[in-house]
Image (cartoon, rainbow, N blue to C red; front, side, top):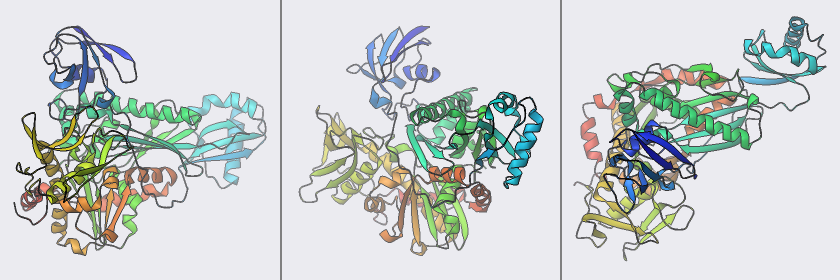
Length: 595
């Protein structure tokens, strides 16, 4: 055994033990130290860079090495740069329709004279009777609060605040305080986790926080992470522990920042794709690895939160809406709810574009759904200079067709650090338009924008102040081709399955943070966005988180979700005889232009 000293971006240094010959990434993963590694150790994404401070290692490059490719031989000291962690992201709240506030938890102030504090049973009956007089049907006290009743009855005098969930009283407080009640809406995305703190009395968002999902250190997409879970016993528990700790930390930050009592957080709604919710609950996901891709459970869940989340009210509950299929999860059920697709009489295509892209088609009143693994490239993964949509990312690119000058826009201004998904899509569309990239995705090495850099054919998009070039390589373009082909083939095959043309679609809803940033003209040009007029396009942002907030605020919306999940006909794309041809045709960067 050896010792690895790790200096984190926040300045903290931790001491870890490593096994002789294991990689730095393996050691960090084993000890729960986060590092961006979207390809899970295959050496492809080039994101897991660490700075070598000392030690005898297999690989060195100006003091920087790839953690996944570097084996530990002796005691070593490394530093994790901020760029290899990326703890926060720009996020969007997402469209949320007006919602009647009718939460599962209600707080009621009672003016009531209680008997001697020792008369617990008599006081309980008085409280129940007073609530029933006010039209609140309650039959019992939650067992978890009974031990707190005697001292409370001694101090309450003539005023008491009662918190009710269903037919139970779950919290009693001394009167005179404001009626504070909060819930948390949690969207566990493959790439990022978003947590919203919601006032259950008003329905308002109090605050929110978003972080990179720390599971990305074990792979950037669902398939990679599922493979990791199934590769060894204990890996599911490891990912669950990382996820629970991260959500706990995010909740703690929101509670502390907003000066609320943890006892006043009564309800949590968790949404995410099928694998993410399996990981959160610790459910066996092995059924997702083989046809017919059956999840452990498709139904909704309602459990006591204390099994998973601490430092909140002990009677708090967690709710997760039902999944639609093995690869269309609770997040898409929430999408349908918040977009109000189920109410519309239009023929609508809803596309939640991300690492895994889910597509729902409503046609003639019926719902059809499919899923396609678009991978992390559209969010900057597997791209050499790819990054999230955050400060320093090039988010828009335009190439002057006359001068071939490349112009770009950087999030936050300043020096460019890399390309986020929308910038990459822009760049490729522009490069195709000026002929630097052919329709089959190959770089034209005779074009003025093509150059050789470190023995590799690339196109230089921008220069950093230190002289480093931000480029798109042939491999980068191939990654985007595969991602866009997955999305395009998904909606094309689904329309073909229902036997309608894109012209028969009345509107296209694009969900997810990627869709909110993309230039719709560039997206349409290369086929990620269906070829419909601007008036038919709606960019709605993070609909999954919006749906989670609705489920927090309105108990009746949960019944709607139960019905919705059962009403969607799932289409397994891989079983369609024409899907392979559709996918191959979608690899072309511009539709119907030959090779």
